[in-house]
Length: 509
Image 1 (cartoon, rainbow, N blue to C red):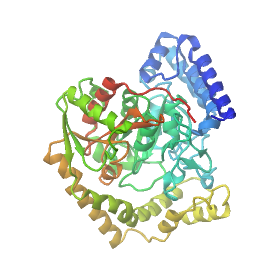
Image 2: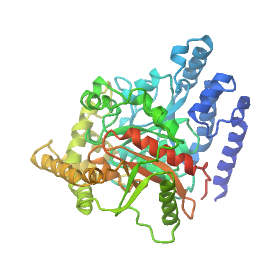
Image 3: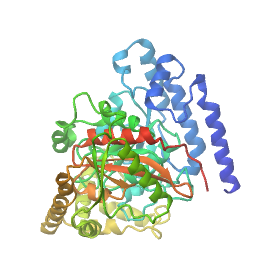
Image 4: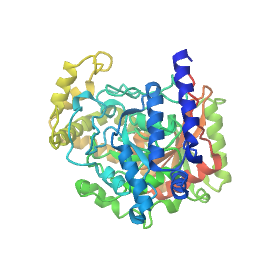
C-alpha cells in the first residue's frame, strides 16, 4: 500500500479506537439494538454517535469516497433526540431508529440543507418541494439524517460504465481491497455501512444497485418488492423496477430500517397501495428467526454459480449449501429457468427499448416538480454535460444512454411490446419454476440473478458469504416472488446467524 494510503488508514483506525470507547460504548460495528441499549443505559448519546460518524467520514472519505456531503444540521437533530429522550417524551423516543444516524443515497430527496443530485453537478443547487417518502418516514421514526452517499452518477444510467464514480463524489473504493470494484449504483451507501461511517444507510435499485454493492462490500442489502417502499422524491429510472431499500451491517439492522420505510404514500399511491396490504401486522422484525431455514425449499438454478472447481467461491458456496441443509432446508440443485439465456439477452438488449423511454418521461417529470433547478429536462442535462466535459468525464464515460433516451418519444407500440415480452419471459421463467417446485427462494451469488428478479419487481436479500483469495467479499442472495419478504428475512437471518461471516474492512491495496 502506498505510504499516503497507509497514513490515512492508520489515522482512521487510531480515530476509531479513540472514539469507539466514548463513555464506555464501542461505536464501531455497533448495531441499532446495541445503540438503543447505549442510549437507554446512558453510555451513549445521539450527539456522541453523530460526532463519531462525522469524524470518521472526515478521516476516511478522502480514501473511500463514500459520502458526497454531510448534513450541517445533523448535530442539532441529534441534540434534539437526546433532549426528547431525557425529557420523558417517550412516544417519539421509543422507536428503534430514534436518534440513529442514517446516510442516504444521493438520489433520495431531502428538504433541508443537503443537495439531491444523483452525483451530478447538473443538479447542484436544485431545491426539492419536500422530503422523499422514505425520508419522511425516517424522520417520523426519529432518525437523524447524516448526509448523502456517493453513487454511480445518475444510477449508472448515463452510460453503463459502473464502478461507483460520480462527478460530485469521485470514485468510490472498496474498503476491503481498495483496488477492487465496490460496484454500484448504491456505492457509497454500501461502503459507508461496511466501514462504520454510518449506523445504517439507504440505497435504491433498478437492477442490481443494492444487491451488487452490498455483496462486494460485505454488508446486508434488502431489495424490497417494488411498491413496498415509496419512490416519491427519488430521482427515477423506471417505475416498473425502481425500489428503495436498506444497506446495513446486519440483517436485523436492515429489517429495522425496512419496518420504518415500508408503507403507503399518497405521492406513490398506485404502487404503495397495492403493496401495503401485504405488510404483515406487527412488521418484519417478527421474522428474525434463528431456525428460519427449517423446512424451507431453496432452489439453486443453473447458470449462476459458474465458479471453477477448487476456487474459494466454489468451495465456500458449496459449504453454505450444505450448512443450509443441516439447518433443515430442502436444497434443490440443478434447476433450469426456462429460456434463461433468452431472458438475459432480452434484458441486456431488448430492455433498452423500454427503459430509455421510461427514464426520459420519469426524469423530466421529476425535474419539472422541483422548486428550483439549473436544468429542467434530460435535454438540458445532456447540454450541461457537453458544456462541462472535464468535470463530467465526457471523454472517458460519455452519455450514450442519455442520448438514446432523449431520442425516444414516449411509450409507443414497440415499448409496450418489449414490456409485454419481458412479462411473458418472467411468467414462464422464474415465476413458473418457483411455483412448480414450491420454492420459498432461489439462492444465487451476489447480484447474479438481479435482472431476473428486476423485471417483475421481485424482492431479494443478500448476506455476506465469504472473501475471495485476495480478500474481496462476496455474498449469498435469497430471491423470491413478490411479497416474499417475510420468508426471505427468515432465511437470510438464519443463514447469517449460523455462518457469521462478516468481518470489518481490511483496507488492503
